[in-house]
Length: 340
Image (spheres, rainbow, N blue to C red):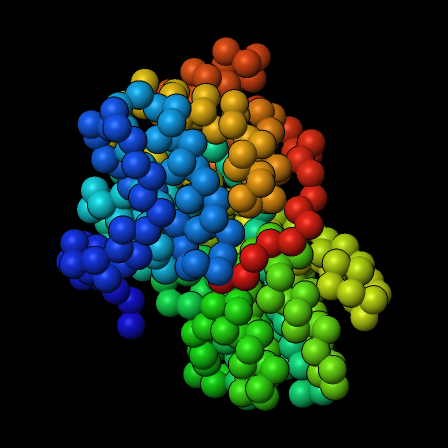
């Protein structure tokens, strides 16, 4: 069951949601700020922890904290409640929050600062379970991602597009690491994961002896997803060999851009300072989260889930990037993306 906004606020206040995680001390700090991230095993968490350190050093009179959360959906509720000033969010979830679409009860006022990197929709299956298509997941034991995650959102939408209802399968709600462990133990037949390339838990899973791991394509559902949920969905390949010699071919899958979301109450100078700090300290961020290499000046506005903050646009304009520019490419390919 989804955690409500009030429950999230109470949990955060009580210290149950990533309490006192990655606090970065600063003697000059006057204003405490929070970054909502994700699970400790995922990309959002180390990226957010490094970002908290950078911003505490670079944004005057502030002290930033990276908080562990359940990721995208819950992060938008934390933005709404004022318990987070920045949040890592998948574009489809950010769009729904801004529009007031389900599961959100009303529009949430927020801005995108930057489009960070793409999440690839992994549909990982035990090939010995007789699964060759998404439709074959009916009747199987399938993890659709942890509750309140962007993985869960895209998993349920792809299943719907394939005509597979939630009652047509035995559904689990596990993160990538937990899903990989459950598949190793024979507890599930397949799982969804939305993340960067390659995800370490999936790499480890494909190396498991006597386990025949395969991946399903999802590009055939792109038009349905766009029509039903918005234009920010794209298709890209998980390149052959990303997950070992056993992955002999490219796998065309739906990808969703990640955005760094700012509270609707953030002032222009703060948004400008944050954007400037991110680009001027990108090497530090890449060291903690290799996916940070995918951010470029040209790709910073490639998601249209939410309006971009005027402060971020001001910085980009100073760098010669016009509003509305989207130039994909120029980022390095990460060696490994942690699971979570």
